[in-house]
Each structure stands twice: as C-alpha cells, then as structure tokens.
Length: 315
Image 1 (cartoon, rainbow, N blue to C red):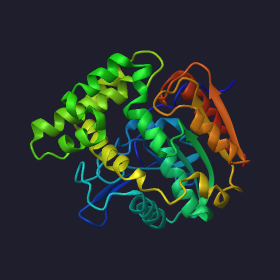
Image 2: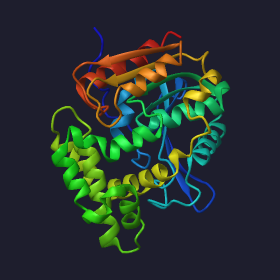
Image 3: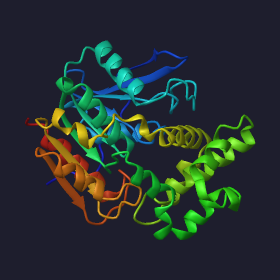
Image 4: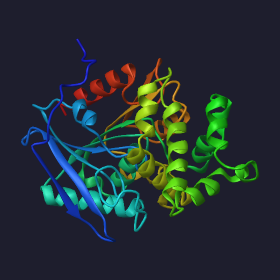
C-alpha cells in the first residue's frame, strides 16, 4: 500500500555553517543514510527556510538528504540580509555545498520557490542532477507575481483586504513598492509589522481549508521577516532569472526525468504554471491532487510527494 504518512522525526547525522561571501553564513545539514541516494532539498519562499518536518519526506534508510537554509533565511546568518542575495548566488551556494560534500549527482526536491530554484539550478548544472521532484510550480513570470499581489483577491477578498489594508489607500496601486519601503525600514516596529502582514497573507492562502496552525507559523517573527523581505526583494527583480525565463532553458534538462505534484486548488501557484512546464518537458510526469491547495503538508500533496520519491528508488 502506498505510504501516506511522513517518516518519523529524525536528527541530522551531520550539520554545520558554511561561510559565503558578502557576510553570509549558510546553515546546512544531512539526514538519513550516508550511503543512500543523495537528495537536495530546496525550501520555498524565497526566504522561508527549512524545518525539521522537511526531513520526514524521505526514507532515512534509503536516502542521504542535504538540507540548507538559503541566504538570509532560517538558520543562515544574518537573517533577512539582501546583500548579494539573488538566484545566481544561490546556485553558486548549492554548487559549493555539493563540492564540499563530494556528491556527484543528486535528486532535486523543491516546492513553490524551491521548484523555481531547482529548475534554475538544473539548467545551470544538468550534469549534477539525477532527477527532479517538484511541487507547486512557480516559474517566476510577471503574471505569477501579479497574481500573488492582486489576483488572490478574487478568491480571498477578506484576506487580501487585510494585506492591502496594511498600507494607505493611496499606495495600494503598487503594493510591492509600498511593502518594500516598509520591509526595508530600519525601525523594527515598521518592518516587522509589514513582514507579519505579508507572511500571514501568504500563509492564509496556502491551504485548501483554513489552517490556524499554518497561519500561526507564518506569523512568527523570524519566519515572517526572512520570507517577506527576501520575497519582495526577489519579486522586484523578476526572481533574478535568465533572459527568456525558465521555460526558455528547458532544452538543457529535457533528458532528465521529473515528477511534478500540483494541488488542483493551489492559489499561491495556480496549476497553469505546472501545465506550461509539462508542455515543455517530455520526461516530466504531472500528478494533479484533486483535493489540495499549495501546502506540502496537506494530506493529498504529502501522499503524492511520497509516491513520487518512491518512484525514483528503482532508477
């Protein structure tokens, strides 16, 4: 019978901090079996950070899972730093970590922004990717950013009203600029309040059914500041993606197998992006979960991800 529950809690068998450039220090850890199939876990956001629950998607007896917090996120330091924080630098950080751990090829696993970074990394270094398991596809196109900032009001009008209501009415024509000014304000009372408003908005729209636990986790100061500030920074710069976007680079990874898991009612990353990706990628298999939204922890998404990982065991 296919597994539907996450694996039990597990502690890392190795962890550390890797000094980077521009004052950044990156937290990383390894869990599972040192001799298992290597997996790279990429968290969402950008800026959300990884947590202990993410270790539990993988059979600890079969996989060697590498998890790290991207620049400015989670346990990496300094929290919320935007210095030299862009997609090319994150790709370089992944390569630096891969070389340090002496891994030749790994399975790339990521959801939401993690799917974006995973595809960007794979297109830059296809020789080091054995396959992809991606969830809640986000291609970083302008239309997807606009949907997050404005389109969600069509389905979450009350939640969006609270998000937009954090700034004066005169500034709501450009919510990204309005939030950016507040998220980068030196006064913690200003930037933390804006970060909580942004992050709670995202958390409130992430599940098919209301989840107070999800919203509460998004409202925590460390999560909110890293997520909101870095996400706004990346949105302002078009996610720092190559010219032509990710779909324009699919020929570089066309030969690599991919598993894509997408919630039918994903409001953060609507299914049209997953459909566009599959249309450009012959070796990708798309699983639409009929009763799920965006979160990886929703039962249907969780089960589909576990099944997708399992299919790579025999490859």
